[in-house]
Length: 387
Image 1 (cartoon, rainbow, N blue to C red):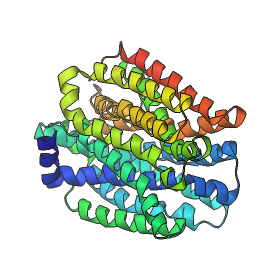
Image 2 (tube, rainbow, N blue to C red; image 1 turned 90 degrees about the vertical axis):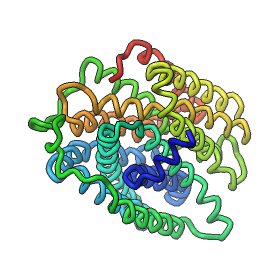
Image 3 (cartoon, rainbow, N blue to C red; image 1 turned 180 degrees about the vertical axis):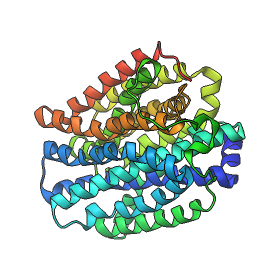
């Protein structure tokens, strides 16, 4: 793993692509740890918070087809570079808003920029894998997890210096913006989507069926698990575990740390044991983590449970994004856009469902629902052929 990671980080092209993934995770991790601030500032309950969080998937869903068209028309390099910069500014909007409606609008814009960057940077990774004949997809998604992990603990650090939430987010966005400027110089250049043989033909989006449908169903389960942990881990640590304020972000930290480790190992593990085996094992690990956090709601055990879940979901996205981009008779922008539509729906819509379940019952039961999704993910993975 260490040799592969050194090679990844010493290659300007792969490091630049990885930086795009890192920015996605870093900014989202910071946002996730500040969700309690938004909740208490506007005095909303779990169901209302769930509705507010719904604005993110609405923005993502509305921009997914737009992202694919932009990639096809202007080229993946230009779209990825601009998206890395715009998303840094978008994350400031909810924290500079004066009303709850402005927060909602800001989240819609964030969802759109997330979707555009996610589609474009995954295409960059897929094409670079093919050109360099090198497995980098899992490591790229590992960079997302490293960003998520880093973002989840930065608030603990700025608390020590008495930095307020809004100022914290401004600083984090400026740091991400600097990284985006640096990375944009070294992204590989493709003039436009149609310049490669696999993208020849008119771009189109189609309804998923067959193997692609199964890939999407697994992705929905995995991304609902990921999104639910990301958005609700800090609130779970605060309201259910009732831990110290300095440990509120550590549930998300444990989750994202082990997700990062799993992904950094993934480029070696996946070819060795097979994609289906990795997906099935991940489902069982995630289900075990859910059992731990629900049955043992204490600081140490909760962090450990979130870590199990992080390891379980770690290689899901790299496997499924790569498989979707390789679906026959479909341009990579189209396959990834379709896949990303449902993936972002799960990632950003899952927390909304958990919010409603929590309002009707309790947050631990909402988490238990995620455990059922893990078992569905296990079942479908047993018979799905992956590209």
